Length: 464
Ligand code: UDP
Image 1 (cartoon, protein in one colour):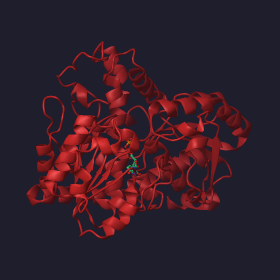
Image 2 (image 1 turned 180 degrees about the vertical axis):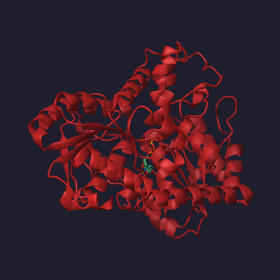
Image 3 (image 1 turned 180 degrees about the horizontal axis):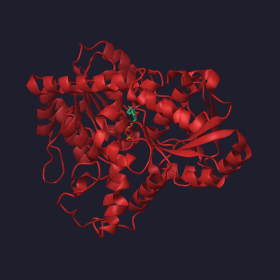
Image 4 (image 1 turned 90 degrees about the horizontal axis):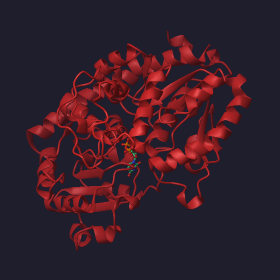
């Protein structure tokens, strides 16, 4: 019933939103904040001081941003690594409890990032309703929720020390997910049980399983099986892509590195669909050897390229990491930046392909704004699982072959770029992703699944 959407019906109580301060987490949660504020909800968004969003993004009526002390020294204030972000979250905890306690009469609900394990306990100790937010897709959520079962079955941990090889037989019986090789699980859980990354994953599984509801940045029609499996034990609200539900901003509100806009002028001067965009997100860092194979592959392909190389992602300074003479030889058809306005890049008419690490934000952003054919090159986190969805289930991405030593060779890069830009495969990819984009567009339109779910969430958790 659409009437519940109108601002008059929203109470003065506010929703508090607590993101984990990572590039790929803070943005979708801020998009959720804006989507709710756009429906007349008062939203209080809490962030560590170091990740305060750009001023312009705060000018959304109904949205207030509170910056809490994060205890980080100024020179370490930005950067996207789990360790720093957990340190700053933990530093914020006591200030957060005091604030929430002091405001509790006015708080309708706390939405917390699944990475912030302490948040739901605080909400329940103050008798505040809460809901968990998961930044990836429903399949990844179902896999993570299955971790305790695999521990009980003696299947996890996969190995007792980091140097042992991972088992190579598929794990079956994960509710709502395909059978998966151990190497396709989220990378953290492949460590031994004493490793902080394994412990973090096991904790994440508990946080998700104990949640009273989970909000997921995905689209119901794309992931019916995992969503049905999850719904057997917890209410699920799929509200993706939040980028679109929050009013299609042309830039992300929070950038951990300054955006280099010069590449936009460079793109303006290129011919339509001629440029390959290469970006591995905010955390992945290929080895030096792999980086050099990629550089040689880009050069040998002859394709135009826009390549994001984060300053912290190369083992040695960029100049030294690149093959000798690379910049000189590719200066007429290549552009390297340290960080870019990804939404503007993906939607630029000159971009004709996206070589991505397969982070969930990058995939959904491309489906929301660019819809250019993708190659999925997973590095970390749940990206190998995302590759299953992209390449095997939705057919919207190409895979790369690795050599036995795990390296993707220059020749393979040349080959995949050619498959991406020319011929039947390229056409099929485009058709399949156009179909996915249609599902996505329907989901966020009035009466579509994501917009209905956001409305239901609002009715069940806020307007009471
Ligand atoms: N991003 C960006 N500029 C860049 C590269 C990446 O703004 O040059 C953004 C991208 O738009 C996305 C985020 O960084 O929102 C990466 O998130 P994703 O989930 O794809 O990967 P993660 O960084 O979490 O591995």
